[in-house]
Image 1 (cartoon, one colour):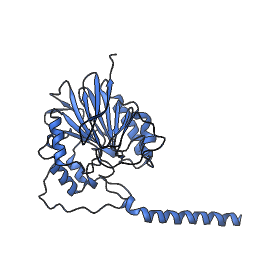
Image 2: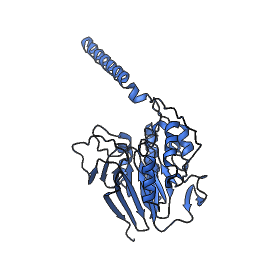
Image 3: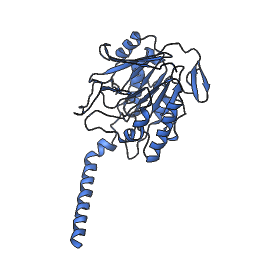
Image 4: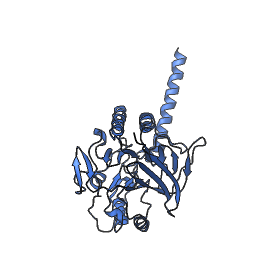
Length: 327
């Protein structure tokens, strides 16, 4: 018995030492934030046009949802994946000239590093003079917008720039929400917000209710961490375990984080930056691309057309048509 106890204590001691060494080696990667560059130009006060209560006067507020009083019969939505401050002003300008009829755009997080003032000001400068400067945006933060630490925190700067509806769960107000349009409901999920088990169970219940409550509308979900990551060495246990089954009920589910394009309906991983991760050998997808892309969605009463274009050339890479058949 004594020998067994000694062996047990040795094993526990080795595990403690191994854990301590790992934490020391990985402390900066797990908990350290990079230094913020100094913005040497004039600071521009700014918040984006969103679908929050005080943002778009042309919309009607009913039961915590914005309804466009002049919404067209065909709604055009552009979607960007991870950007990491990697799209230039010239590229935003080209996109706005290529798609002048856009009604809104969406972004999947990791738009700017840590919510720092420097990157926020750079983003404002890059968008200035383009259609995206005034076009309403729907976005949710990625892990790079959060400040790392023992507990992740989202800087106030993010909330000030993006004033989204406050119709989400209590631990995701302003970052997890939905917006209703005539023909679709867009559901944004902040996958970095949950920390505890009850956060995930509450979020799953909220997502299920949001999908069911869409009625006959199409349901489009935007989130940062994918449910089924096909990148090697990456597994998002929270989204996979607690949201995977529920999100299968949506029409399209967009995620970023892995900087690749992979479609396995209804799940679509996408990215808009020149940075990729190796793909798992056993990954099974309907369509895969390793180049930066963006999506254009054309939504009518009966159809949702999703087209994926190469960011550098605007060439069509993939498309999917989702239809709601008459009851």
